[in-house]
Image 1 (cartoon, rainbow, N blue to C red):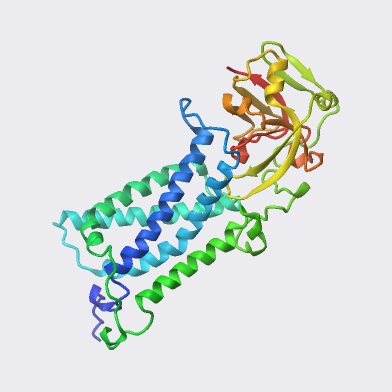
Image 2: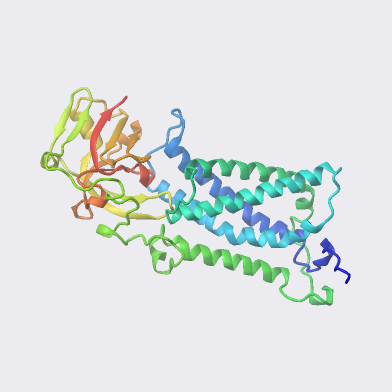
Length: 379
């Protein structure tokens, strides 16, 4: 019995496998990747940037917007990537001349690009639901993969630049009469509308975790912004952090030019201030809240430190990557930055950091340290 001949590029005659289609969808995917990459860099350097790189404390909602865009663009990239792969997969069956350097580099760059992007989106999605079934550190791996994707993408674009230029502008829509007789289905325009609609639908049904007005339709979002103790979600509970209760002898220690120590009642008797600030988490969800407590700049003044000082914040959390954090000078001096004692009109719940936590503008949620028991002036 004679075996059928292996497929070739010509075995897929649909006019939707066309450079113009790949170019248009590639543009959309490129925008999503660029937004995701740049906002991801912003988040990464907020948490682990070089000492010389300083971030502003205002606008207060900037991190909320950038991280919401980061997760949204990554989510939207999923249907765009699938559509892009569908338009070009017949190229995989084209014969490759081993002596042709350009096509070989292109194939390798595509292999690296597709595999790294698929892995990036996959682990990014699992991060939004806080499931880490791998032995490597998520944030460092996510960051490294982002640079691999950008490098492979630049190589791919450089190789394909002549083809991209040739098909950048609109070409006439193929009419049904011009299609091969054995090809039926969507037109190019129909495909574009389908892909755009799928990306929009995925975006609308997930962005509600960072845009509360769309919360009711956020069926794909892993978090509901207003669901949790005191109307605010919790990522890391007190139990998970090893904080099972607060001893009656708890005191806040401030280490500076003068060392100070306060009981919770003494902190409550200090001048109290209010800040309306969001918790904006790296997983993409955010929720605004009303906070009350003592301004960090006032505590610095009480201990004799300049208000431009950096402050190291120490939590009672047992282990973990964020048991300590640092407030740079601009954040410590900002009048919105509080050692918060109350949330939405009532005492902090234990899961929200009772007896005291940090809340500051334009900061990732992981740096809004909970269960604070020590502040150290470090510069």
